[in-house]
Image 1: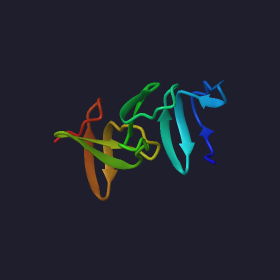
Image 2: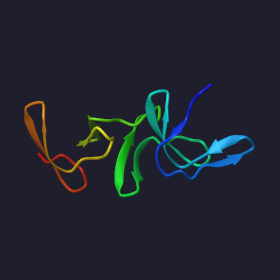
Image 3: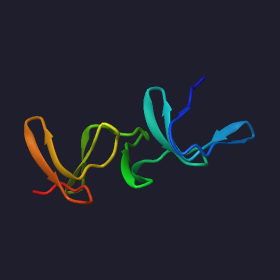
Length: 103
């Protein structure tokens, strides 16, 4: 039996015994973004005023660089797309307001 911990946007509904919610969900030590129909987000999702990235399995990435085409992004420990100056692994990185790495 899976345990669901709803951690944000608690619009929880019960329909035919199934919990439906839109927002961040912790399950099996991973964080997902669940839509009302029970499906999970993949790619970038605008969660309020922040953007988060979810891999092909729907798991939210944290503290990682993300390459998308020719562009590079970074998500912090909370899974939020970063902008500004980042010091990581002895290097300095600069990201524009949209979170894209500047070269």
